[in-house]
Length: 618
Image (cartoon, rainbow, N blue to C red; front, side, top):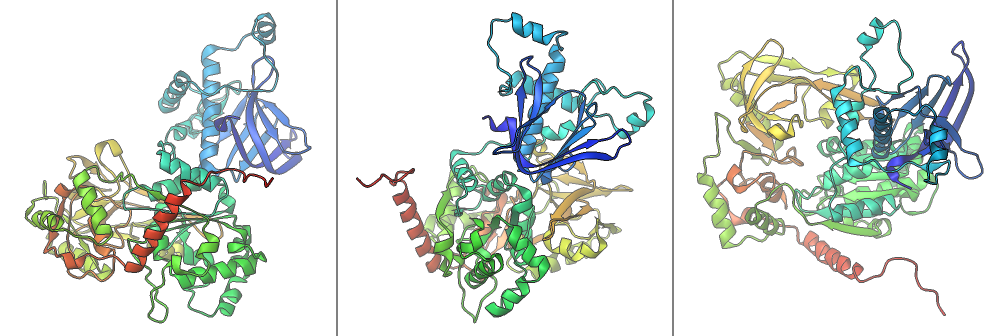
């Protein structure tokens, strides 16, 4: 079965009476919805509930598709003539996007070719055998391109739904043509980029139900892959979490502490059981089937053991983590846990439950952030705490580089968050221009604190002409207007600042929307100008960013891996300036190095273990 031609999810079907009230309603908690053709080669939507129940078929004509909540795994297909609506929910978002795209492509192609007046006669006269219920063929490149142009054009002649204003003006709406609301969104699928072979193997393992941990150096696409995995899982039972608010924002999730519901985890295990037994917390634990944890390196081992015990207790299941599938991601050679119990640092892999919980391990090796092999080799050496004379000379030489351009200064990476804050406030005060305040629009005024913790954009942004800023969202990748791009405010219009970026492009910053999922599954959002002051940035807050103009002084480095995280933010050696570099500022935790030595030994041994069923004993 072609995966693009089907989706497995919760299906609710409602039939309405003429008065608009529901005459019949059917709910299938797990059903496969696919596209097939009948003997007349017409496209049908088939809902197959499973086991002994018969499938239900709907002819795809005179219908409308609503996909406003497609990224949450929800969509609906309304059949006008049948007075029936098929509601899809808890569908893996990537699968749902692909499925709706196929509907759009195939129906667009059918309209282009025209519908025969007598398709059954055409079928009988043809020499080609054809059976009713046959799956539709995969979309061809020509079909995809034709449908894409239709979606992007968005003209009245296309099969996309007209804007609400146009609908009101029309006295008659033609329902003979299928309509897919905002079909253009189908061609801006954030999960559409191709995966590498090593990324695909991890995705397949995750979808195969295996508890796994994958790692890789900075810039190998760990968070990108994690988003792909999350998009391929049913959202209602998947909890995407991370050890920090910044990392959680990158994968569209919440912090692990928010999910666990046991505070910082410093209380006794019995108290943690009590906290997690609260109905709202326990309900989330029990419905979760997939738990994703990003930046696992910053999760303390003691905390990991506690939430593993809590999972078994609350779910009344003695399997590791109460039977929840774990998908863990991070690099232990980057930032270590912040919380220390009794003054002792414990990594997650040192926890008692790690070996029972993690059954498969993977390592991403291809670096995507940098393409300079010299710089990549330097970073790989620094990651393990190895600094040669040549590396020292190369990094010391960067101190003399002029990386400023068109008035855009280098962002100073600081080891401490307060240092970065003080630098930004001081530099802004020194500008003589009049300040302008941009206040965010939050969907829930009571959620401002949560949004401040988890989003990169502040609730209140103060700017002046001449302010150094960083772009916090991908606006136009082709023009270099990407998350982490550096610029300077050149003027402030009545409604928005205009920024000149290092790429040479000017951009009038308009409010963008960020959304955050709460533990309960509801969504809160913030609309704000996608900028932040960027004279300075903390190393912790820079995780996940690629900076095109950065300088650093590593004299106050206090953690293993901190220097590596800072250096690996740079796009290349030409955009980097290291002040007063000293080899003593670079080191790796010996416990972590030993973990990775064993980790790679196990990976090497796994390559020689044949996969599949074990042979029977004779």
